[in-house]
Structure formats: structure tokens, C-alpha cells
Image (cartoon, rainbow, N blue to C red; front, side, top):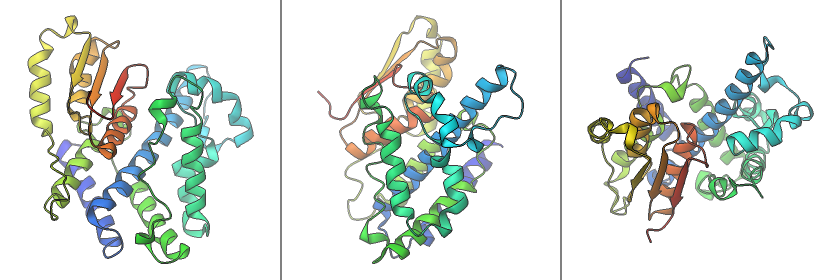
Length: 287
């Protein structure tokens, strides 16, 4: 899918979700649900594709991790935590939760337990700090979603299904756009004018980020690390990944961000692009 088509698809879906939640969740808070759901989808697909590829390379045809039982999948937990930094059971995958979300009277509890389990899968490992709090802004029990559980679950299920139906290509990490960063920038643009709700935040347009990365790429083979003191959602770091990082897979990425929510978004974004805990370090407050 071409770049403009991907962006158009992304923006139309975000507008559609915003319309579904109109009158329930304020625009600035809505951002957390959109990006949190995008992350949940992508991290599920990322792990599924990774395991399926391992099985295919091992000569196992037609294998689909999403179709395994949780008991069968447990044998992969340790390896996945070591290699990916997290683990998700098949029943907890976004694509499987979406199959029953409209009929799940306890969807809020289902998601809460899943998010806790995903973050908890890294507990006691090197990736613990990198996974901690990644879903903290996705409040499944917010009264802004509705006055009762049934109403809240109905809205959450609509968001899940709309994100599920987004067409962002077969392999999101190879997309020509930074889908996650683009969604963040689009949401910033939509709501930054709401009575100072932007909190003084500014983002670097992706075109500027790409120019900076390309100007540096001439000496890419000599660069060992990239640092952004105001990393936002990580757009600039990802542009370096797609230029210098291609010839230097050991490149280290460092980012600082004063806004806790945006700090989480950056960590999520790096995970989505296979820049895992062992190649990326971040600080929530500038030192």
C-alpha cells in the first residue's frame, strides 16, 4: 500500500473511532485508547509472526501460533521473553480477543488481566523496566467511557474492532510510514488546540526527521548510537533506524522525554519496530 493510502486509511479510522466515542471521552484522553489499542494489535501480530517464522524456518508448514492452546504455548515463554522481551498467550492475543469482544460481558476485566499479564511476563528479567506501565494510560474502567460496565465495554469493543479492520499492509514494520508515530501526530494536530491541552508539546514532522537521518547517513557506518533529548513518540529515532540502522544493526538508541504519557508512547513505538530493550534505553525525565 502506498504511503498516502496508508495515511488516509489511518486517519479515516481515527476519525471514525473519535465519532464513536464523541460525548464520552475527551479528545486528549481518547488518544490513549487509540494508541493503546494500536499497540495491543501490533505487539500481538509481532509476536505471532515471529513465532510462525521460527516454525517455518524449522520446517513446520501451516503453523499458526494464534491457534495453539495456552498450555501448548507455555513452552515458548522463556525463549520469547529472552528474545522479544515479553510474552503473550494465544488466548490473550489481540486477534483472538476481537473474535469474542462484542459478547464478552467482562471485556474490561479481560483486557485488564491481559495487559497485566503482558507487562508481568517480563518481571524479573532485563526487559522488566521497559515493559512496566506500557498500558497504564488505557483505563478500561474509566467512567468517561460510560456510567456502567456494559456501556464501557460496548465502546471499548468498537475501538478494538475498528483497529482490527485497519489495513496497514502485511508487515507493519516495513510500511513506508511510521504508523504509530503518524497516528500520534495526527491526534496531536486534532486536539492540540483544546484550551492548552497540548501541554506545550511539539512534534518533529516525519519529513524533517527523515532529512536529518539522511544527512547523517553518509557516515552511518561510523555511528554507534543515536540520542534524542526530546524524543516524543520516537519518530526521529525510528528514521535513524530505517537509514543508518540497516547497515548497523547493533546501533543503540537513547531518548529522553519529560511527559510520562509520551514517554510510554516512545517505548511502545520502539517495540513495534523491533527495537527491543537490548538496543533502546529511555528516561522519563531529563537529567
